[in-house]
Image (cartoon, rainbow, N blue to C red; front, side):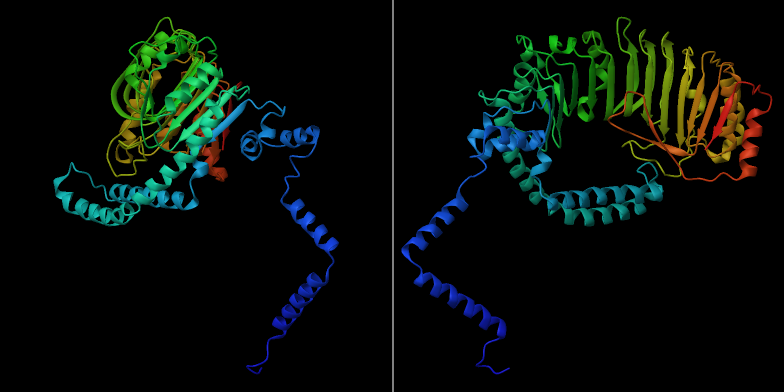
Length: 507
């Protein structure tokens, strides 16, 4: 193609522009008037000019979050009657870009990789002869984290920008005096601090009468005095979830006395104040403590006047738990680090779920080669409660392989004296047919004359927020038991036991 000639595509575009220019110059004044009207109609807000019935129909099709944003589009949408949304979830994560999450993931993976390598090589500060290897691992971790620390200012800038947008949204939602709506359930999740948090809590509980409030504060801790709500009359709070939020008052106000469900996570899950909470929350029925990193040697619960029915401890760093007196307790669930359990006066305790995974001090899986052993009898000390449903999950190195034979014998004697006269169903998760597992299950079967069903699964338990207290989601492992292996396990369990009314399920 010659340099002086234009490409065919360019010639076509040029001719088209020429035609439009000629048509524009040759058009009459009336034609130009019609074109200006069409241009103005394109910029006009035609949606707001629709009848109210159609606008209300559009709003009814939207979710609660999108409905709130329509207030920004037009003031007319604000006063329109709409379908009553009673549940709202306002999270600052919506304002964080994908890059922020990628950088955050890199930092978490770097630290997790360092911990995994340290455990794989069994490196701790206790053994001086391994200090050099530990130093080498630390050097690699510091070199990797040195690169990640360079990105920390970027992460903080993203968080500050997100919080500025988030504060504007929540203020317009909760603090606007002209807003009229019904809020039954509200979830607030922030990635940082804000001076408006106290106003949000007071407005949500005192003004709007929220019955279900969840407050999650990431990366920071926040102190709030719930005594500020004592003089308010529109308090309907029944369920409260706090994460990294602390009650600063010395006394628990009336708002706590009306609670029926309380969930404390991370920094909020202070074990030292649990008994005070149960004494002051006179109507409390469900209590859950999650992911508490503070070490606690012993946890004593003695509240004879408590109405608590469900108690769940998830990944709380507790050495011993004494359930001394909870007369109304019906369900108890404990997951995470192995903990010694002592049962006292529990006349109604019928459902117990024990999910014990050997962990390190930080709550992560302990895959190190330590020789620590966890006798299964440590979970049944004191007065045996009238259990009807028992769930056990054992993973990790609860029994040392080198001392398995000697450990089983001592466990058999200890468990043999524990009579479970009311137990009807036993579920064991993580059962892979090992000798100590089979022997322990058989001893429970012998000590449970009313046992009707034994369910053995080679799987694991996962947490599900929507499930009820103590209701575990069990994910079975895709394992095919060999017929000889299955027959051997079932025969060993059935030997010397009456199987007339007993069903054994092996998966």
